[in-house]
Length: 174
Image 1 (spheres, rainbow, N blue to C red):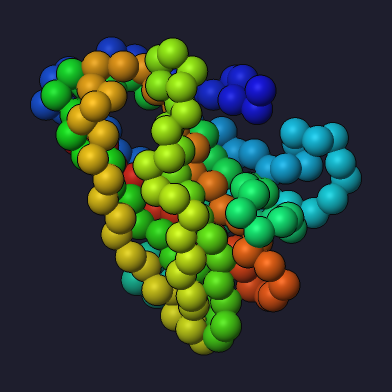
Image 2 (spheres, one colour):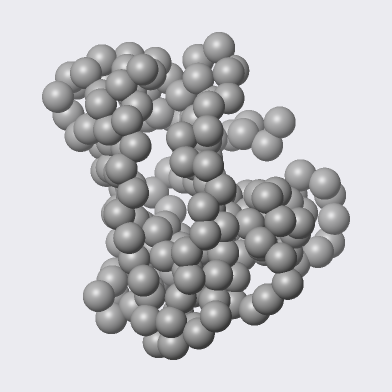
């Protein structure tokens, strides 16, 4: 399974917030692309970027790859010990900053018993020339409070097109 080697946070104090800003690097998130899994030599990246628009000059994560619609082709993953009183996952996401840019994204959680839960089903956002259209997504995760879980933030090529990169920033759990 492609989750091997993911970082795990240590014990978390109840009431504490977990936050990844990606200001300087991937901050313990493990990058992955389809090529890593199937052993191909194709094209795909999952990487930290130092600049993600004029309103985010300090960094974010960019996912890019080639694949089929509705199939993840790039992702970041992290195994996290959730606080006992956790309620919410919140993150920012954007498509690429070009006209007609569009890309799909999905967020999954693997629970302590290896059960898979889709927190955000495949969704598409579009870009505009020279503008990253960042939006904040909020998801309830209280059902997983106190568990050690793995989060997967995924991107997908949603069909023919250009500029189908997916960006993530400011992931927060509280």
